[in-house]
Image 1 (cartoon, one colour):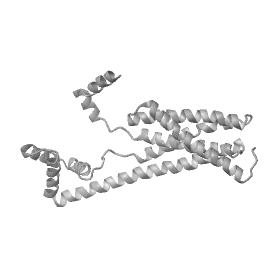
Image 2 (cartoon, one colour):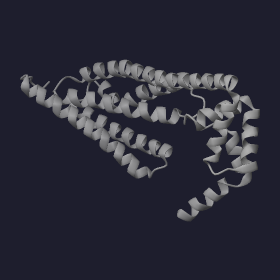
Image 3 (cartoon, one colour):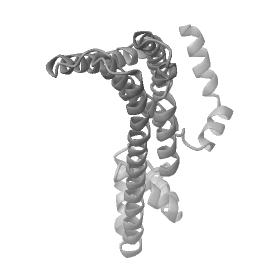
Image 4 (cartoon, helix red, strand yellow):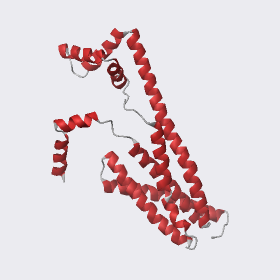
Length: 253
């Protein structure tokens, strides 16, 4: 396996593949948005299911609360992610405008900033001056270089609407899975909960595997870690519901 990975890495670093890879847009953040929404949706919905069962409430309550949570919490999470990406893009644009203004007002000072930035990277003499001249010849390149090098900001374009929509869809889609068994009105609540637990466990494990693809981590470890997180949240909700049922003297239904 290690030899295969090494050979694949070498293949990807051939001159032609490097050229093609650098021409492509940066990898989209939508996978991370989907993983975030899916984890949160499954955890919160299954926690509701576990709390309802622990409290001995009817299956219909799990469905009602679960759907209400999916829509309200999913919408809130999608909007929050949208606003986060939008704020980041607006901040990036404000830095671009600031750097453009500086270039107009004090171009020599901005050239000196470019010179010192690349001198710190080890360039000097004629090579350094060639780099400075090349960058400052292209106004947009000059601005983007200052944004990335002086301010340390990633300049890849953000898509707030897409990120928010993906987060919401993932939250609702994955979060609905643990509710499916509770639509069987003729089944016992305990049986529904068992099937819901199996489905939720599978969702947690698959989300962990998807997360490992983003982070390039071992799939099994990531899957089991995500599963453990979901089980812990569900366990807390179940015992909280059971404890409150005892405190308030509710009889199992």
